Length: 169
Image (cartoon, rainbow, N blue to C red; front, side):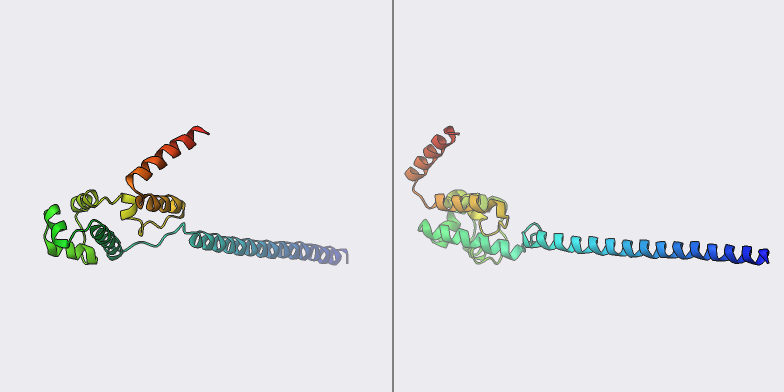
């Protein structure tokens, strides 16, 4: 009889230990699943904030680049009272090439772009204004755009004012 009690108590004890282990394992698995779901939700929230904040910018196509630069060249050509023929002659390129550049139908060689910017008085900030999508540069681009509309005398006054303002710090 004692033998039966001993075996029964041993089996009961082992079953209790086994059930405690099973419960512990289930609890641990549940905790791991909850933790994993938390990390997934956290990752989704962070990525959505980064994407909406502009940290992952969409890429710009060549066509968009050609179009934006072409519009600026045309705008400044007209401001400088030049025809496409006159611009082509001064840049030593064909009128057809000037037309393609202004319409955004083709790329522009880097040397041609720089020569056109020098000839027409286009600063790099203005030439690429529509292509820059960095929020941190927005105010600098806006300021550069406003300054480009001023006369040389007003720009010189503004530079001296900025220098004076910097000395106050």
